[in-house]
Length: 321
Image 1 (cartoon, one colour):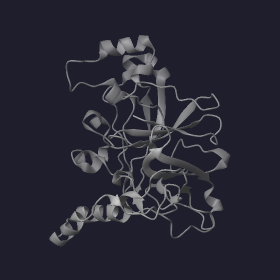
Image 2: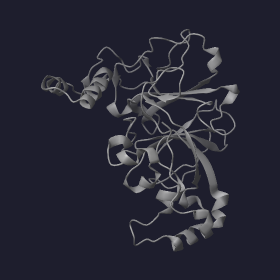
Image 3: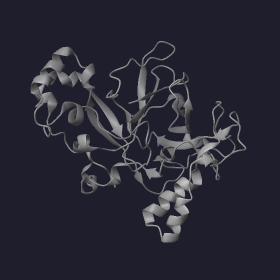
């Protein structure tokens, strides 16, 4: 099923024409639970990974023995979705966080977890280097990487035509740091949408006119930031939102500007962004349908992946908002 973002409740460019200079296009991915295959764009794998290429591993030193068993995370979701029997409830009560992989040292390599695979034929606006047409994003599901203690994100890109035989048994880590770092298998329904720059990054003259236009006393009134600027949910490209820290300069180590590649969001919508709920999901807007991937980053925010605007081989950067 396609997903259709409703028209914005206000044509803000008709109100403030200068906003047309701060318009952008992003691709909402609209992940929804479904049967995934290596040949399709998806969240949660399996990936189009060659059988003769080593599966990527995390080799960064950090504790990897303690957490939740990946098998128990998946079984818990399956049983709760179906409605557990009393016997199954008893089984679920035995699942605990713990030292489930005592044989692992802090430097033993562990398999990375597939997060999202994107094919350029499926995702409008996705452009990859080296004539690649598949982007594959993995992470090590522990808050233990880099100065900011994020999950360890790894990017790969390739040509689909060069994968002649797909790896059938794709490795997985025994333990994950958080169940919320295990993506539920989802198929994607990409949709290009128009968005506008984050309010704090607009010129002062436009911000002043927006302040005059906004109805600050009516909590149900249309809001530029929530209804007219940047959509919620997983998306490719577009503008970055800055609700937590305020705007930051995201610059590559080479000194060049970095572009927003991918936004991984904990929710497809919330109370403040209900105007972005796709038409096809309006009947389930008040259910947990807004958390289809089961991924939660940070305290329920967004993880944004930025790449160098000139050279993707330079280290990417992660920003949590």
